[in-house]
Length: 157
Image (tube, rainbow, N blue to C red; front, top):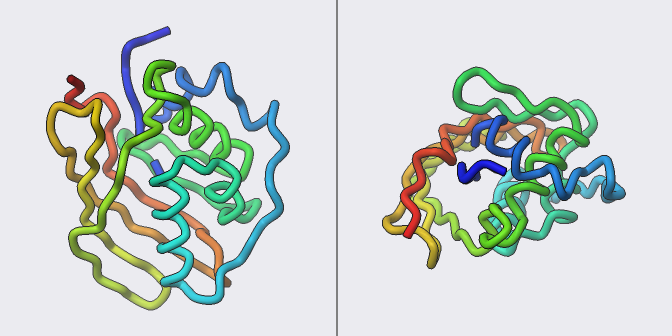
């Protein structure tokens, strides 16, 4: 197991390594749950991410959703996105980032898309980590996300 760490969130390589023990293929994907508005989709995503609630995170993504990651990697479909979040939601001692907290610092709304700057903090981080994401919502779901998160850039204690 590599010592590389991750984050909705993220390099595919890091998530793939971290999700070996907890794969969405081994877990039952939750029912899809639409939110009443685009803002509610973003709010639910951040709330679920900040408590590492895998079921709530994956419930937001339709079958044809995708997450675009640094380096050109793309997680396509609910199972791949479930794998991503399974790795993220593992305990820190097991190589995951459970306990990390994301806070939106600024956000611009364009239709049902949010372009957000955020900061991540955690007891195991030596310093806050800043990044940005575009959250593309459609019909009350998280249709796609484009993220600058690079788990290899996190500075751990």
